[in-house]
Image (cartoon, rainbow, N blue to C red; front, side, top):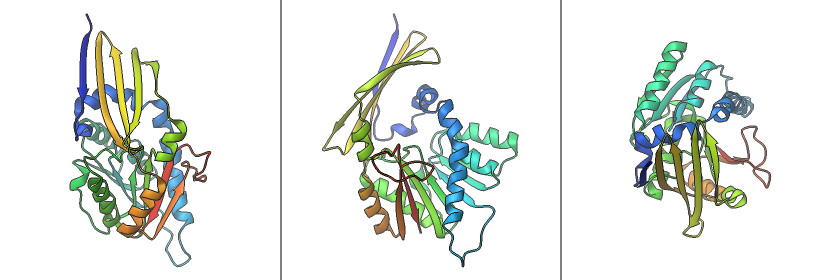
Amino acid sequence: MAEKQHETIGNRWYSDESFWITYTPYLFDEKRWAEAESAAGMIVDFVRSHQSETETTMEKYSVLDACCGPGRFALEFARKGHAVTAIDIVQPFIDALKETADIEKLAISAFCSDILAFDAENTFDIALNLYTSFGYFPSEQDDIKLLASMYRALKPGGWFFLEVLSKELCAKYFTDGEWFEKDGALVCTQFTVDDGWNYLNNRWIVCKDGHTTDTTWKLRLYSFSDLQRILREIGFMEVQSYGSFTFTPYNHTAQTLLVAARK
């Protein structure tokens, strides 16, 4: 008989290494890894194109990858010659990132830490929080604390890039779930929305090698107008919305919400 495990993850589910060991192959597949190279290049091009005539054009940037996961973006920015600081709370992610950085001799400083404990001032040209690594904290005040720490960490004129599943896109593309097969596993996803579209409830079931893992967790949803208001209250001067990493408009054709905010 297959072993079955069901878990409703608490407020700090994102720090549970067993969760990431189970679900990383499905959350960070080949497509996700492949898109990082071009996305990193387009972010750099965006920053350079928004420099004023009085600003010195920089060849290399200092980059903070907050909640870096397995390091898709940290690696690509470093491969382009930028100095990267990468932070994630999951030790195996940081270990793997350090190993790759050592092999490729990349300028990456990787740390295993809770991003809410991170504190730096006027240090980075670019700060990143990508692939919906936002909205999982126990309270909205924790979310705001993270955004405020990104503002402090940036040099004057620096850019913060935040990618999230917004309320708008959740409503547009909402599905009850799906079944799919990958890497010898049968995966079922189920989604519901509650509290007036403030939360997306996630349930992922993975059946592999006679073992079933059944996990649920919540994502706090924000609209662009929500994020724009919060970021401006924190102090960001410019807060812009885009619908892709090619910086297309955030409209009815958008595939994601990419927020670009300038200190």
